[in-house]
Image (tube, rainbow, N blue to C red):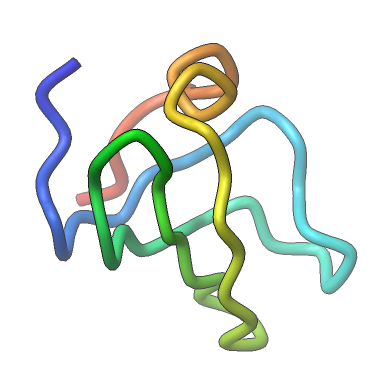
Length: 58
């Protein structure tokens, strides 16, 4: 997958705050994502992000 730092992506499942848009802060074996709704940051394995990826938000 061709994901870059700073892009906003959409995932299948939403965050408990009700938003499913995430900003990419770090890419590697793990992704650091920031919820665009509440600002919470989470680390997810690359495999999980690629599996749950729905699309880009422009």
